[in-house]
Length: 183
Image (cartoon, rainbow, N blue to C red; front, side):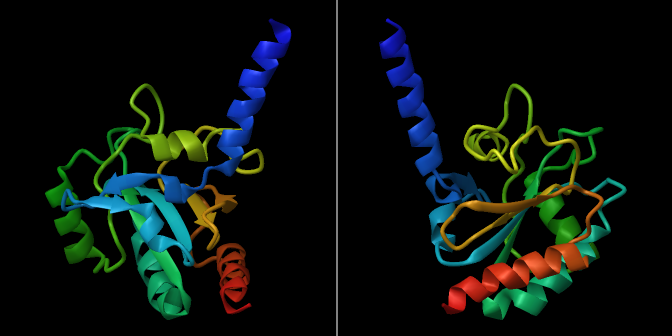
């Protein structure tokens, strides 16, 4: 029986290790399926965002970072979530209007999801899973947590909300990941 349990859990661990963000599909902010596999070969910065948060002004830095590096292969994905202090209460259309009118966001925005708790979306279940991502896993603590994803779909680094998208820590990690696209 022990051997059977080990076989089951070992197989589950191997399957989790083989997964990447490309195995997941979200919906775009307009409600269309958005398979993350569409970003294979790109460097992706996934960010759980909110419109009424103290970190909301990071949209400016997200947009400027996107503009600076998109031609080199960076994609930023904004993923609205209402898990923290009800700071993203709007509908997808309201979120889209807010982002485009106030922050002139041009990077892709996804439909609102849950990034923790009982209704956590499978992508964030994977991102926060310590077995699948031992270096970067762990529960999301607040809005504007950032995951840098390499061109192979694996998580490279996680940045907590206080770390801005245009900080040297984030931009150097982005630049390092983008150099892998040239080799």
